[in-house]
Length: 292
Image: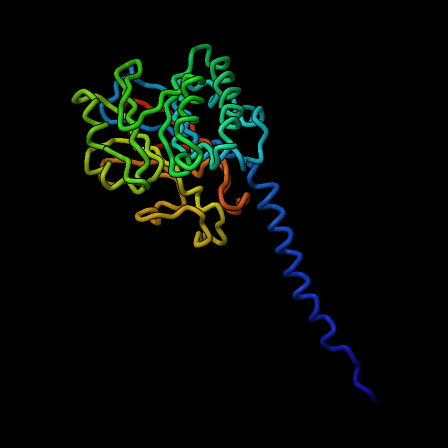
């Protein structure tokens, strides 16, 4: 009796399957996930904020307009009615990577601001801080675009909203341009405020300075996360690692929200780290954070 041949003929399926799965993952990471914008909504009790100062903030970060797979009008359409009705827009840096992409920043932000004004029935108060990539793109040209759009650039400075709430912005901690004490000093004693910073590594200093709420970006949520491992992240820098995943972080009574951002950098892919926009309902202290 002869033995059947080809007992190992099915082994070729293993590498073929692996290649197929890798191709599917690459296609998803390049063409699908970068477009799956997640809009998270949070109710955030803010220390010192009274009912008259309660407001809603739309937080966007890391636009990286040149690599964004969305079309300009699509960004606004994906946000939803509550996000578009927010009276305050906070942008935490990295608008684009190169000088040639500055015009694309305006192409994305102009329809967004218009949609927010229409949905909210009021002028939008928009604030921004620089990211580490913005310096490469050209701060002067970007400043002109932001000014033309009515976005207030807060470079180690503060601005007051209605109801006694203040927004404070610092230079990018990555380039050591932040002057957190100088920026906070502009807020009258006892007034509630929110700090905008591109790099979340500022959080220990912000918490030590008594900043009740910090909004940051930079990490892209790792941008490429496989089984929760973000070693392939494109965002680095000293002190960033604890905040790579994004989301909420607490230190004592202080809190920080790190956005996964909208765009991509280095490689135009996302895997396990969907792009994100956050709607933050700032309210008088009534309890713990709630979100969805």
